[in-house]
Length: 212
Image (cartoon, rainbow, N blue to C red; front, side, top):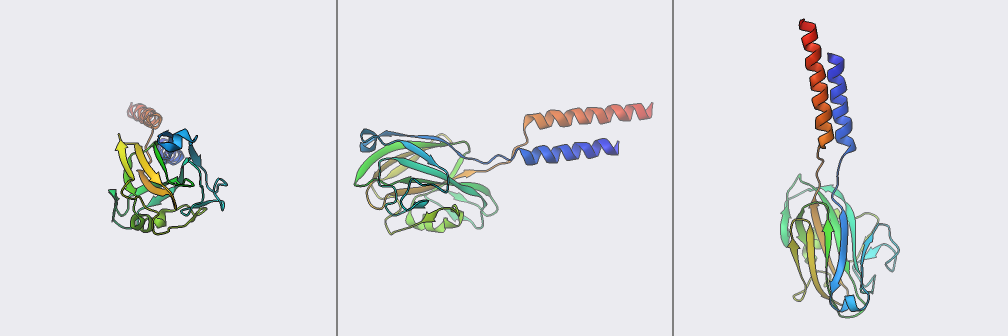
């Protein structure tokens, strides 16, 4: 009996640990504006990356093309409460951070979107918010934050559903950048519940045999 219980507990811990699921970028697209006519596309980066100049650098004219870029920054536990341009972060909350970058060579318009596989819970779009959330940056990337790095009056974003951010930018130097936070959860999959139900049934059957 004790052996069966131990097996069940070990299986639960193994399954739970093996299925840790972190929210990530799924896809994106440039849908309109001058960038679309210039051949701009969505590019998901994996840090460290070579598409910028210098390599793995964002924030100060480092891409200079009509593409929309995004990359995952990492999984973090929020250290302190923080209000953002959309949503907020709560101390102790487990989150994943992502950066979206649009950095054309000259003043250019772009509409597009980025999808995530987790719920969007916060968006930092001002210089002050980007700096305040710099503790959630990717350690492999060099971030440069000049005075105008946040969104300006002609720039906007909106959410479509829980997992898509819509972007409407007009950018020049040094580009437009937003940091998106998604919920990072560790769900217990249905298969684990079925397995544990089977173990429970086996334990119950063993108990009946012992009583008999």
